[in-house]
Structure formats: C-alpha cells, structure tokens
Image (cartoon, rainbow, N blue to C red; front, side, top):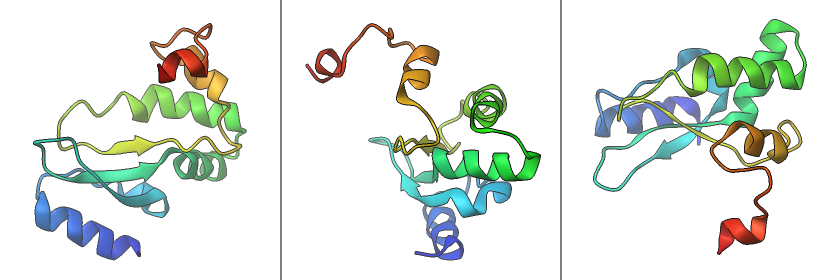
Length: 112
C-alpha cells in the first residue's frame, strides 16, 4: 500500500492523527488501541535508516537520536506508534536495556 493512501485512510478516520512527513518512507500502516481512533504506524527500523542516511551516522547513534527525540516525544492518543520488527538494525538486547524490562529477563519469562 502506498504512503499517500495510508495517510488518506488515517486522516479519514482520525483528523487529529499526527503524520510525520519527514518519515513518509517509514509509514507502514495504521495502529489502533482498543476504544481509540486509528493512528499512524511507522517502522522503527525504517525510521532509523532514514536518520542514518540523513545524518550520515551509524546504527547506534540513530537509535540514540530516535529514543531521545522521537520515541518519547509523542504522549497523546493521536500521536504515532512505532513498530519494531527487530531486523538487523537494532539489537533487541539494546531495546531491553533501555526499557522497563530487565536485561536479565528471558524470552521465556516474557512469554509466560
């Protein structure tokens, strides 16, 4: 599905949804929390690739910029969601280290 169509669908269902034009190539669809209106869904991996290319930086630097300036910048219900499918750009261990989940937790513990 192309970006233009995705944006039209989002705006038709949620006029207040935040669209990040600078990350059009990372827009992958819509996200929805139960009882809330649809919002823009972006691929974290694609956002990181865009940051890397734009700023001529490496993976970890892009991840640090993402965490500091993008990931925590959107607290409203109409703000975008970022989907991380854990391709080779971001090490899942780095995500565990930066989140509320202890790095000592195992996948088995998380799934139980």
